[in-house]
Picture 1: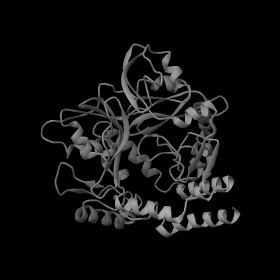
Picture 2 (picture 1 turned 135 degrees about the vertical axis):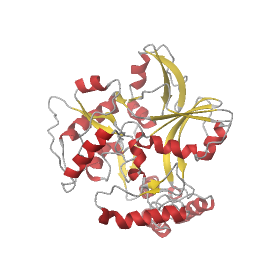
Picture 3 (picture 1 turned 180 degrees about the horizontal axis):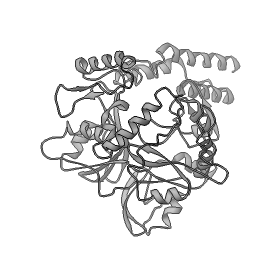
Picture 4 (picture 1 turned 30 degrees about the vertical axis):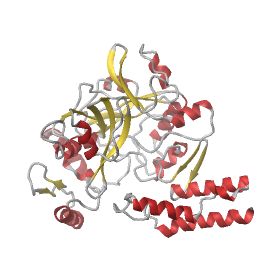
Length: 431
């Protein structure tokens, strides 16, 4: 489902496997698209552009449609990997990874290594809502990356090159937040007119008027169409794809040392600070190197105690309970943005979980106040109200409902004030 891009006032609503079941939701969505410009729900996972223009051939479509129809009434195990019509698109490392025991999944037509078989852990093909063979293998991989270094072949990572004297003005219009400085990197979001998240991109500013944008594989054509509608007639060029057509992610506390063995370039913290970008030569090949922010990994490597707070499983530090996130949190095992990742993998020393992360922070502040015997450390209802009022006054949008109001993550204002008051009352009596 989606509005037509190249045909004005044309809308897609077809190919539902069970039409009557989907009819009410489809009618609601189409009505909102036509009358309001966008629907209440995020419909990106039903956008036909996720199949691209090149890879989803007629032969692939026939095979995959048949497989899906065969499983129409099968038990909907969450980790089932569809096998028909594959492989369709592979990276140069596909055969190497396969020889090392990679078990592949498919993301936007690309074969991507989801996990690796070992002598004691094999892909037995058994599906479950609980423990599956890959759980043990992925746990070992996450522990290895947390302590050492890991490399991920990220086939299908979208790339756009934006260049020209009007490039910065164009991107500032399409994305929320100002563009990074030359040689810097940031993650930014494209928003709809109502303030909902359309998509995201990692933006690297290579030169004063030249940017490289990287984003989710499933959104390649969709994001390109979105940006094209805002592209001015002159002063800016938007190129889909890049001469740097591969993407490797190197992560872990020993990643810098591993890369330094392959280049004469200086990868020190001073020469390559966090959230920076530059072109280097790696084993004789030119690459664009982006150094991202792994502050927690650095702290863990140095033995600095790390406390983390989380609620949904995607927060940094929730890697401490990664198995539970993947097993019990919706989409905890497979991110729905098309990146092929899952819940957080970075661990911590002490993890505080809460129905809403801010409440966990309020509790931590209360514990600090009790331990220090200092009531000034408490987060009070008055401070919470001031924060909420300030956010509304500055137009911050409640992501759950897509509107400007003083509720957060679906919880109304009075619930946040009540938690702060509860913590203040308990600690005040102990002081």
